[in-house]
Length: 89
Image 1 (cartoon, rainbow, N blue to C red):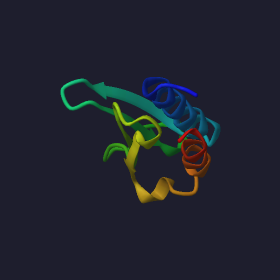
Image 2 (tube, helix red, strand yellow):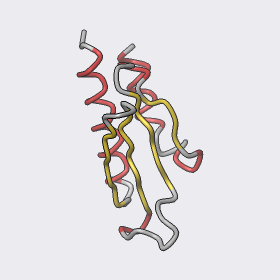
Image 3 (tube, rainbow, N blue to C red):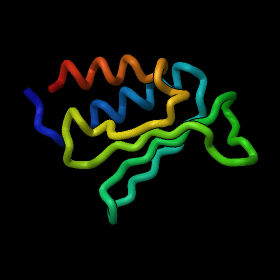
Image 4 (cartoon, rainbow, N blue to C red):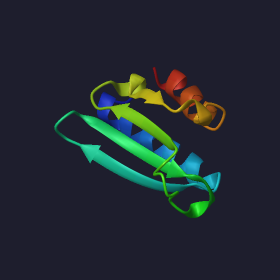
């Protein structure tokens, strides 16, 4: 169906759009050295003094398994992303 790189772009895009739809402020950072794409989010549209309280880690090269880790406070919000990853496997 899709190659691994395309699936990763789809999942990162879905995660970002889902967070934005839920009212989060989002910051995306790609770290080429370790192959991770990090998505940081904060509620209410502003960054809290202590930094971001929500994050998602995507592992480059894993295709549908790219969504490798995230904070547990995003579990329910990321359900559509996890469901999409299952469909893309």
